[in-house]
Structure formats: structure tokens, C-alpha cells
Amino acid sequence: MRILLVEDHPQLAESVAQALKGAGWTVDVLHDGVAADLALASEDYALAILDIGLPRLDGFQVLARLRERGKTLPVLMLTARGEVKDRVHGLNLGADDYLAKPFELSELEARVKALLRRSLLGGERQQRCGDLVYDLDTRRFLLKDEILSLTSREQAVLAALIARPGRVMSKEQLASQVFGLDEEASPDAIEIYVHRLRRKLEGSRVRIVTFRGLGYLLEAQGE
Image (cartoon, rainbow, N blue to C red; front, side):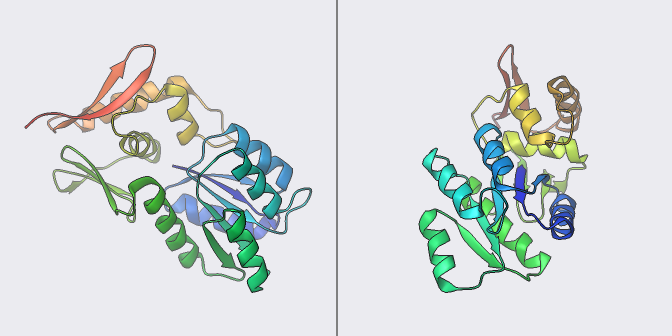
């Protein structure tokens, strides 16, 4: 899953990004509101973390434009403003959560997990497909009750597929969840990750089905 972090303080942005990447998420980091607005209009994210005090467009303006476009992805607001009126204003604009600075990275990670659980899993902690289980809190896959060893790229592809059961995802869509803005997205590389995943899923009741010209679908097989 891919997260957009918009924070104009470079050191804080770096610390937060490293923590989120360490937890297994793909993270894009931007430092101003205009760039954030453009990214949110053109890229596919699971969640956005917006600082309020951004240059060019502030976080409230970015959030308002996002909701005006009908986008429902969860938004966590970061701010040094602790006043109730600011929190109320952000929530009224469509923010899903609010975290005042300074904050502990562990609390931020917990709030991100909670927002993604509600958004992607309807509040559940796990997503299942056959005998494959994905735990959003631990960011681990279990296959037949044993931890499935995956690289970060393989995990990103499998997480994207299991989050959209019954839906075909194109190579381009999968690449958008695997590669950040600062990386060269390679749809062709998705074929390699899918091939590796198929080998690791052999002998289980779950498989990745190819729809030629369309993409891939994760499917549970019968008993």
C-alpha cells in the first residue's frame, strides 16, 4: 500500500517516512501543497498524511480540493496547531484523524494502521483468501498458519491483490502500489514479482490468475 506524506519540515518528513517504510509501506514525500494537490489528483494512494502549515496551499486547502474531487481515501492531519477550532475545521472538511505535534512515531504508526483497517478491511485486522491470511497490524502474510517469507516488493504486490478480492489489477495499477514517485515504475517488473509469488504459493488453496491484456487477480481455490 502506498502512502503520501506531505510535510514541509525536511527532518520531520524524513523521520516519519523512514518509520513508515520500515513498517512496510511505500511512501511518497512532498513538501508543499501544490505538489500534494497534483499528486493526489493523479496518483493512487491508500492514505494521505497532510501537515496543515504547507507553503503555496495549506493542508486545509489540499484536503478541501481532494474531497471536492470525490476522493474518499483516509486523511490524517498533522499540525502544530492544537486549538479545538482547527481540529473541528479539519474534521468538517473531511479529515479522518488529527495528530498534534510533537508526537511519537509509534502513535503515528498506530493511527495509520487504524485508518487503513477501517478503509480497506472494514475495521477487521486481517484479510483472507483461501489459506492465505494478511495481518494489517503486523504487515505479515501467513500461509497455512506459517509466516510467508516475502521481499518488500513481493509483499507490496500481494497486499495490493488481497486488498481487492475478485478484482483484476493491471500491471500499471500494481506498479503504482510498489514504486514511489522517486523511483522508476516498471510495469514489466510486476511479471517477475508475480512469478516469484506463484512459486511461493504453490501447494496452497490460493493462486494468482492472469487475464491476458488486463492484469492479475488473486483467487481462492476449492477445498
